[in-house]
Length: 377
Ligand SMILES: [Fe+2]
Image (tube, rainbow, N blue to C red):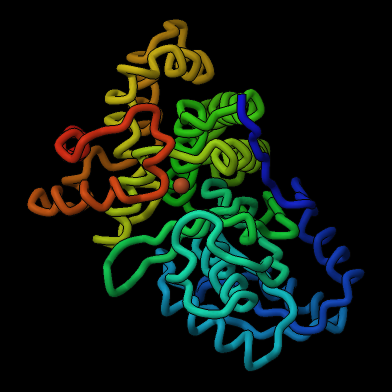
């Protein structure tokens, strides 16, 4: 037996009206200057304008950094950090999905610890807690608003750096389905499949615990039930709210049990071709779990049951994942995403170096990872 850790933010607000409550809470904390990290689309939304007005009314000055790319880069972190330092911000607020949250984590971590974001690649490399970060989520998938994971693209090496650090956990996470209702269906599908991947990888992880198991299985059941509804009818508030809970549960699972080869491999596709993270995961998930079935058959059988299958088996789980992927219109394979077969050896070599590969239930060789990429072609 060994000691396990369980990390989540100290306060997590969920449900319709959560954003308003979060702003009230911030008003009581006495922050002076905030850096708002977001993107060009979100900064123009009524929710963002409302947030800015309310912060102003509380006497909190706001500097906006809205250049975050879908796969946030080390340059994004450096640009945001320069603004933060110029305005002497004492708080960072991220508004969006995984991209603004990850970028904001990078900024807040380097602001407190110095150096470059590259210095923190790996596990718990920082000495000091980051600047206080409040993460307001607008998607139901990455769970970055509540995790200690921060993924930043290194533009020189064309790889995604995985920064897994207890110090990047936000102090407050906000999941208000009113902010998710406008998500287009392709983004709802991709982020929802990302959440499913978090739950599945955490459940078969070598670092799973009874706590993460409970979170993962409930997340899988909710996603199977509500993701198709949220994709088909974006205004279905029950589906939006249940997906917010599902992705949060999946976040609780993988934040503590970590992930596996799906993410290790998807990070390479994202870094190399700048592809959407959730889509890469969805395409790789069935092929990786087919490989994992040689050691994780019983766990995958539980997943089949959580997905609502009568047949509790690994093959039923993989079949159900494929069916869900098709139902929410995810592209079939890597070929459809524009990946090139010649790149597979390099992608596989980098995947084996990714921190997420450490907790996959079985370790693979370079050739086996290459084969999994081909199986997902
Ligand atoms: Fe993910």
